[in-house]
Length: 267
Length: 295
Image (cartoon, one colour):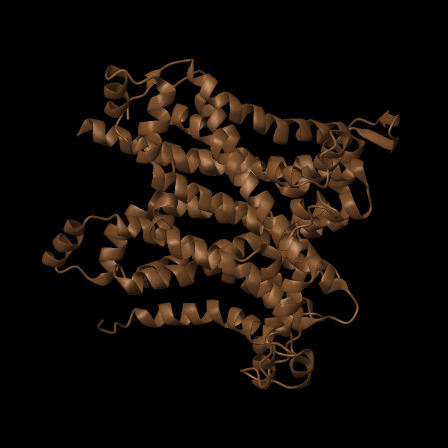
């Protein structure tokens, strides 16, 4: 590839992005003495201890498991309600449809802090406080509108003639939807699942407030460690690195669709 | 696409409607209830009308937080949008380099928000952080834990680090979809890079840019976790933004009434701005539709 001048900006930007992450990785392989004692760009004594602690201590790794459970649960719930709705918005005009669409989007704009107290009271009163379901349901607040929006964009790209010819060929609606339509928008479903995963994975405020012990997410486990006396920087850094890894893996697989997922959404 | 009129479509929308009612309407009604009552216990509450609203509108700390929030969101938009466009223009268009660059650019978006705080905490600290100690070694007196201005700038840079990539990805997606004939025509006319940007790329990106502005405005207006981890709102109140203050009121001091009144006002402000953006977006689309019809 020929080097062009415009890459200078790109390289500077990538440096800016990657430096802090490199520093976190660097710290995660150091002992605490080295972190606090001397300044080094590369670990002098390279240790895996911090990672070993996380993988062997239940109070640490259960945080990752809890997070994964509610994230997956949330993705399933969001997708299964958003698919039919997105189909309706992309194919039919109905009373109040546009208003409903904007109202849905407006929930994406609601400050999570606003919903904190009511969620707390409401979920306690129906007895699902401190369960994975509580966090998964709370996260549908912003993931369902987003899913409907992205899926609607993908579905609008599928010509309506396909629906019509399927019904002429004698397909019932549910059979058409599952057998013919869903495979057609498979990339769209992938992108939507990715975004649900991502937004549920990165959220802290609701996840932390709605759980105490049984469903405590990794992000909450981390903040507790931060406030503990005598900070364990190495351990904190290792836990941070481990939260970034799943994201990088997922993003590599959907890299060609991410940009598309955003640009196709109905604006 | 022409849409069929069909009221049965409501049946397909019903699950979403029920779920969002469950997770949005009921809680929102609870907030409205709180905001007009003084609550002493479960069965001991008094209707106080608009008292909490008046109290919260007079709250000096809130005024400070609101002012900081507006300045913060404005700066975020002013820096991230142009920077995002510039980076999107400089991304390689195809091949392995393009995939790699996109993946690298997208990384900050997938870092959990509290870890973003942690990343910057360890990066910007002057004793153990690369960034902080570099600044010190250049002779710049920098300390984000004690100097309000430094704390402010650090939160701003952290947000740029975290979210500019969203603008980059949005713009890049739109740039990719511009047909090559536009560029060929421009080359034949001998157009400069600047005029290609000004008359081809920028107009094509208009919608996506409005969307980026909308998303960045909303999310920067709701910012909570990252400054919470990095500075805890301090030093003093220097980096206490609206969500931070609201959470303090609601969970920290358990002032349900004022917190609820504050929530409602907060939500309304965001809705108002979003509605303005949304109207701008849709009216533009209608204009475009009309143009294509005329042709």
